[in-house]
Length: 325
Ligand SMILES: C=C(O[C@@H]1C=C(C(=O)O)C=C[C@H]1O)C(=O)O
Image (cartoon, rainbow, N blue to C red):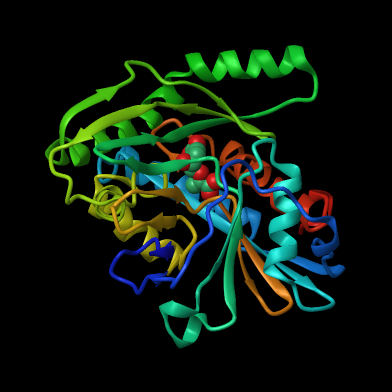
């Protein structure tokens, strides 16, 4: 089984059971010849940056009132090009920018007629779940700070993130959720006592490695992915209340903040959180980014965080964020 699970697990998945599959170990190496993308004509924020700030402000009020503890607010940029965007070309460009050579391109057509001709393309840093035999592992990320080209500033930002009570609080909701969801499935579970720094080319994250031994060999990677998804790294706490608020504010997220990956006949597999990605359709790419909102979140900083997270995808398409309105 290979493909994508949407953010809303009640919606149809884009999964296929291929007749054959090719596995290669190691990073995908970009192929320059396949990486030609058309010229970008417009980039339109949806919602606008101002509207995102207003949404975050209202969410902080709802959190202060006790209705929610954490909720992830996301926005998108609709990038329009002169010509059709090849998902593979975008994948190659993204992988060329990713130091670990990690990326995905998923045909969404198996999810139904609306998804015909649409693909989800991205390079996610976040492992939702990996299973190898009885062993499962997760590496949730939550809590973010922008990187700097200046090594001293970069190190200082990393240090501040590691000490930030707001970010540690935001991170803890994700670890608590995974512990709760994985405990019934695992006979033993090792959760690192503290988060550590997790770098991507654009941002620092807080990450906590989690490892467990499954209770039964019949529990597949897909079963575990469905048991933990969506984590509060993309949803929120309390779980149902946060998902309801997201739907009410943002509408249907489609496959953004879902999961992409595979599961084989033995039940082994790997699922990544579908972030740092875009939905490609004809000559458009809708790129998404979100961030966790808790009590104490600053709306302008949250907008800036989504802009930094969008930067890699825009760079892959040849756009500098100065062009974004
Ligand atoms: C929701 C996104 O990222 C998630 C949210 C994070 C945060 O709030 O700090 C960090 C990593 C991801 O789990 C995204 O990139 O769109």
